[in-house]
Image (cartoon, rainbow, N blue to C red; front, side, top):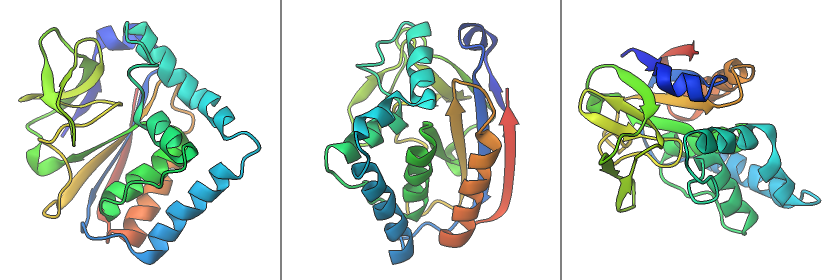
Length: 219
């Protein structure tokens, strides 16, 4: 699988960079130790003097700016990291899905970066990160069909299958998933992507029997 950024999207979001972690994994229920890490992050957020200041951090602000550059209202279309933070600040726990998805959500909240997660068995050919086109939709995970026009989307030979806001059911991780690609999306540059890719790699190895792990930075 080759991942690239569309030139038209890069022109509108010149600081855009992607961190890719692909791995062989075992998808199962999260261990108590992984759940403990999730709860620790929740507690740290809620203990902040004003948890809502976390919503103004540079990574989240850059994601909002990227959406505005594409003509999307970031108050209506939120990056997944911001949506998860808002969920925790409101007093709700991380959603508990499986160890692979839970790892992605943990790193997303820690880094404040949206992360796309894809079962490579259902990705067709190479992936390009581009703006959604008029009439493009897909069924979001646990949601109705999403209007993708002008949203930043990941698209393969079969069409769009993911975005910083919500991924599709077509390439979602399930109990039968064996190999995944996790893509960290930074609208504010590549500076932190290597560190967060290493963090994700370590979590895959520790909690999801991760192996054959490859990382790449795409700019």
